Length: 109
Length: 118
Image (tube, rainbow over all chains, first blue to last red; front, side, top):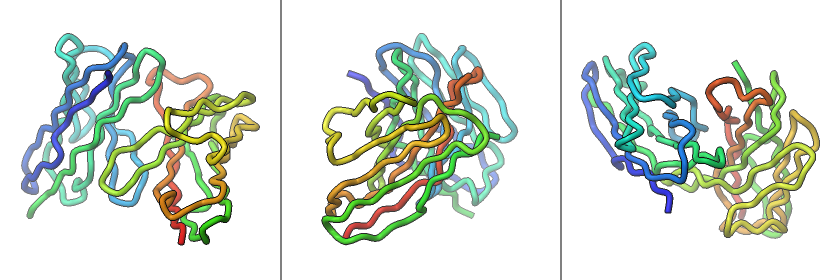
């Protein structure tokens, strides 16, 4: 079956760095997405990786290793507004998005 | 950037009534739109995939006669929850994939519709 695993909850301190991991097992792979979702709102796009390596975009970076079925989202210089759920999703061979359950990130002052 | 709107943002209805939710791509054409449902503290669950001009493909366990989907144009898809019951109360989110798909296969999400059935 298809499966995406990510931690349920993480806590970090304002100004610090946090890494959210995601491992996946899917039927085919056409890319991996990271989305941010604040409570009561729809997800917003953060990043897309289809090739191995690190993609940097401002304070956020995303890494992919296809051979290991592994990705991480790195958030630097954490701000209180970064408190949200972070969803990992994989586009499978049918171009369907398979979603992880999300990681709730709590930022403390 | 690509914008997807949903209407209404929230709706409260009585049990047994039907509710229609609209999803529009405002500045791009979407051949494919997706309807998701999200219960509190859970991830998104894909309900159905809608392609313009053809019947929607429903995920296992989703009743097609209860959740009617129409994708009549490249910019509009509608989800109608028929004979809604309290267990249908949820956050419904649509997303759209552009005709060209760009180079990211990105889905653009609407802001969601919160449905409460009394």
